Length: 105
Image (cartoon, rainbow, N blue to C red; front, side):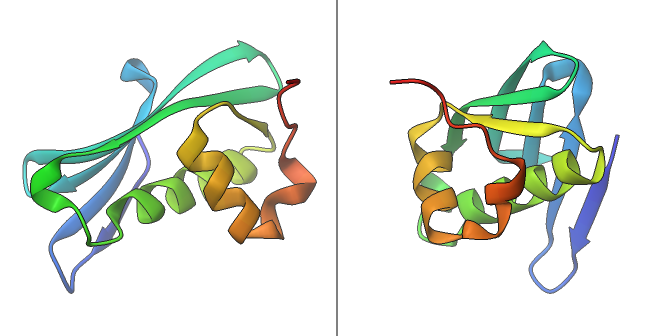
């Protein structure tokens, strides 16, 4: 499990491979996540992003997506963004174009 602590606001970002997701946590509470599948040995398919309504407007979805993408890149894997939120995020942050394989329409 990989994790990153943001001590300024108590938010922790965690990779939970046994659940196939990256989580954003507030203490012990899961505030949101990015769900993925592993279709082959070189790709991680990001399929769904969700943040609890109680945490809306704090930028947590973007933070957990950025954490997920950085971890996937660090593991020398490629991204398939099926999640509409991840697709939108990637269009605003082109620095991950080198590791992104866009799904066919």
